[in-house]
Image 1 (cartoon, rainbow, N blue to C red):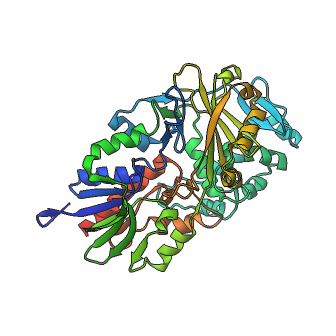
Image 2 (image 1 turned 30 degrees about the vertical axis):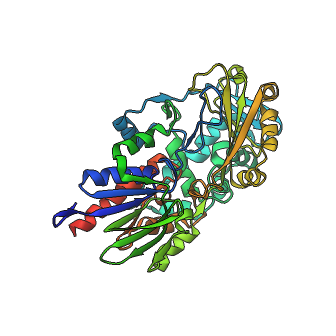
Image 3 (image 1 turned 135 degrees about the vertical axis):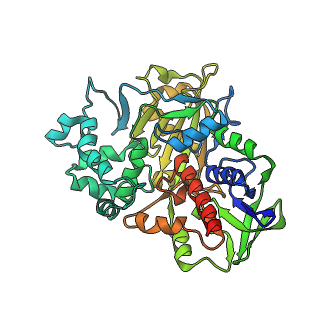
Length: 456
């Protein structure tokens, strides 16, 4: 956008997916954009770890999958030319409950070691999902249509996911099954998270067939976007102060111990609320805005990755994931799409209190011990591993946003609203925190806010 003879200068803080897409689209509109990124590489929580493992193996520490209906993400993946591969769809699921590995398939429904009603035993897991969760998925409504949130959506936001399930008639045993694995990965689990957020998130993953990952690592997407943006990205720049008025914005940042300032017309803040709290604003943000930034919750996520001499699990019923009731949470074959001499990586995905407990000690032994409980053959194949906590990363301070009852609908409009010449992007300002799709949708919304403000 040209004001007089000169393009408007915009500083974007953060080169995660929201910041990268925002910059790219603003540059297309003729703005003069510069990104300040505190890390030494782009991507934010799209982070592929490579150097710690043998034979060129790698593991996703953050975003790992792209859903079949994540149309924005798929569009940008196509634009930059990354290659996608479908996740295998196993014909049975694996769970580890009460010390037993449980196999569940349409042909041989599991005998779940939990207390279920007679009807629930006949329904099986898939039938219980249909009975208890499908009505909730429908009741969330379409948040992209006028008139949302509907009364049903507001009602869902007023209760926890556990309360919703109880209201649908789910037994305590059925709720325990829903607690294990993916359903538990928002915040501190289904006993505390807003039913609306939990159900909206389930919609993002409801199509198992067609879920994909990027060949060579998810970080290929932000890296290729960053290449397109080029020298407009400055790395190692941690923003400390933002001074703003109705005439412009001054941004102060630290680079290798030196303090620099940059003047611009507008700023886009595309970093998590947890990190945004460390930036000093002058004058302060409005009380309403500051309150939601200070109080937005973030999910604790810890990943434990172990390297195995062989991929012994290839014999284990097409193992891609295993749900567990242990602190290690969700087990993933991190190398299903990677070639190697035979080695493989198993990644444990812990969230909530379990994640905090594992990261507090930083000791891998207890997590490895639990993985060996589930996969005993690891004992003779274990070659080492590492623990990675998003809570301890200074430029994320947690993994992704979550909401308690009555927070989501109230907080989201305030999180995404601009204040003067300051705009706010990031998956934490979207309906879908924790997803690349949420980050990109927030970036496009921010670009529209900037363009609209120039057209007033």
